Image (tube, rainbow, N blue to C red; front, side, top):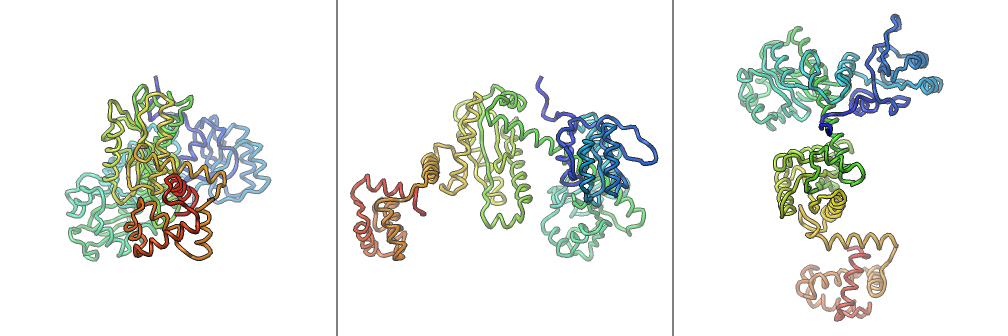
Length: 548
């Protein structure tokens, strides 16, 4: 029986770093790839020797001296421990590095601001039942792991107020009951699953988000001071953090002062929400990584492709392969400000494609491979390519200008080799679409075959280092010496099929001026404009060698 999509092997040290490394853990020194089965989490106590399970992950609470690290890893190595976690930052000496290498115990760093309790709870949740990503029977803080709605209801009961849990973009991740006790603004937020843009803008202008994300205490939003229509109940919010990273926030609609009891309850709630958000992220990352591995393996068409297609539920099916890519021009690249933000935007784009395909083609698999979101889905019957193009155009209409993109559709495939060929075709079409050689947003190879062949021929010419020759070379040389526009004149004439009026209008010159330039370029270059072979050779050289 093939394993289900949410199954994965027991936790390795490398996997734990992949899941938590961005937020909580960093690799300081030592081998993390060879440990494939973490046996448990242990808190180091210098006064009471703990029982170490095999390949234990040891939390070195209070270990700050580098010398302590060196002696402790040698001790842990004798007990078969896998890794030691200490508080970051820590500067290792050469002696400490040698001790780590001898012991075989890797050293990890816990980010500043993250608590040991938070890390221990999350690690034990990840290691529960030996399967990261299987959260069915796990719990955090007595609540089902990752069930944000249960968390919201628990906080609501604690505060006696309706609560929402939101991400950094003010999207509602979960909400409690009793929302009818709040105001019209909360109802609008719940219905749209997003804080209204005009309300969010006011909060930004009033500095609410600045204070919320700067401090670790509750922030009070007075409806009178805000002056937003529909906001009649006071809001009390607190940021949800994991280390130095802000994951989101908790918002309670409740009047009255923030007493010590309410303050403590909100702080505890924020810590609990952080654990669940990290757990949700870890589970999503696991699913995404597994899907990416399976889709990538299937598209490569190697020995593992049949098994990958089987695990995707597409074995024996006639499938269609599509590839979608964001159009990132210079202005958009500046707007995202960093590679990490661009990667996040591409992942959101891939997630949007996955949602769209799952609605119209149940069982579709989508994964971001490099900067392309590839999709594989069953495509029975005739006309599957045309239907896939329509699906792609519907998707592009849905994301609109928020995510300008193009989509390439490959030919239908049944055999493993055909799947790999279809992926290669998708890449060829995507190149044409992304380079702006056509105005289409979604296309098959048949739609852009000529442009694709020209690009491939240009690659061949560039690899050989060929340079323009004959009449074209003479015209280029003349233009460079005299700042003339004879190459542009020839291009316009060829592109207009010899229609002087159209070509002259394209260059914004009088037709008589254009005719004079045309005669002049023929005289200087020796190009016979009446010879169809000469015209074809000129067009080919201009497209392959000259800068248009």
